[in-house]
Length: 469
Image 1 (cartoon, rainbow, N blue to C red):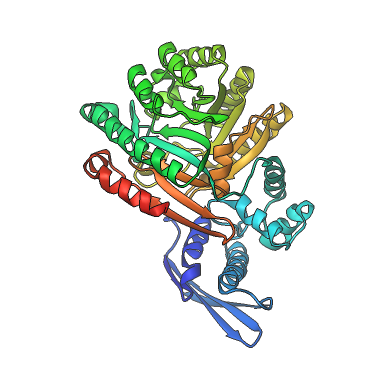
Image 2 (cartoon, rainbow, N blue to C red):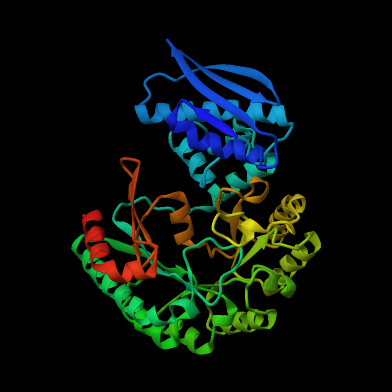
């Protein structure tokens, strides 16, 4: 594919949308886009050359008056994407579940329209279907998610604390995170933890100096429970903020022990994840996830004894799984009845083993899986509360978190909706400052790799102090 976009602001969205309609097996083609503005009228022109034939598509639209420069860019981008979607849909005779919407945060896109007064909340589904070509079920899903996000607070002094443990027992073949297998970094774990604590102590001083208030704490990875019970205690004993939501990703059932859960409970952790991904053990072996159902069930029952709120992840579209296997996984989840369930759609991410071997993925069945999960979970009392999308997701679908009995994960909502600042600690952690009044976001990443982080922890601390000052 040769893609040329005169407007740099639209280039990434153009690439993303074209990739949803075409793949590397299609015949080569070129596509060119340009904007021309004369007076109050802007012309969007698309030239598509394929199979020796060149066609031109033109659409006219008017920009609203008195737009800021930033808002004008956004309006033009939406108009362009709608035009491009209509052209590609007509040429390929395909439609996409999310229409012309691209990007990670579709709910944020809709919320901002409501906040600007461009649409009444109850008219969101109608607008999405009419103006952005979104399927009816996806439009209603976004509307429901917005209604279920009642915990959003926009206050620049409220921050979430994120701590990263980028280490796992083994590497799953669908994973693209910068996470290390324990066997390869075992000699670095203790020194990494010492460096992490050094950064944490500096951050605690920063929080006090700047009068920030910690809203939630989230320890993620990787798999934080790859640490021993004593290492977890060493970390958690340094965290003493009185939050109502304190999450630790346990993830892999083969890393969970009673002793570790006792440590988590002692330090007021309120929420954990135990992620089966599937209850088909053949699939677990195929994807390199070295745990079994017995371990998953035992870990879950132990977590119930300690009264943790539990999230469980599953993935639609794992290699070798048809609809029947996925359906059994959903049924097993419903029998366990965790407070949170996250349904992911398989993503062909760069840097994964799966990226090079996707022949056993039954892609045509994945939309059926996702739709089934949404229907059955809601029938059983679960409500959708956060959503995000990724590049190269099968069928252009999404990841959705569901909750029951009021147990939403505030950190997930804050992160996905970009409404709260995040102080990130550890290798691969990204700090984020949200300036709500200015509608502006800045990010400051730590270095990605454990070795680099150990060598440069003082630099990471200095950058963070400057960033939050």
